[in-house]
Length: 104
Image (cartoon, rainbow, N blue to C red; front, side, top):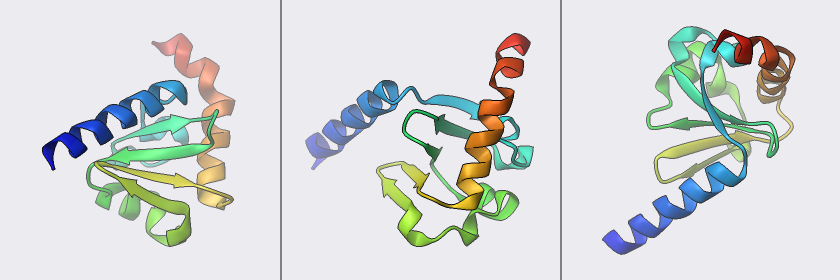
């Protein structure tokens, strides 16, 4: 079973890299900073949380996202699809991406 877990983790790392995902503070996608950090891929149009989702559910309003738009794989929960909450986060990040890069 350990080998399967290792293989899944390797595949996830490869996917995150190939999707152009970046790890940012939730405020950079327009969410309350108390949501912590999220992964975002504008290429694949998703937001992911590593580990527990309680903060993003409560402070980010993600508890209202339809279950069909959520996929949990290993330690990551991916939020994707035509959901207003997800789309607004992706749009916020795109609109402010240059500002964020200049601040770094």
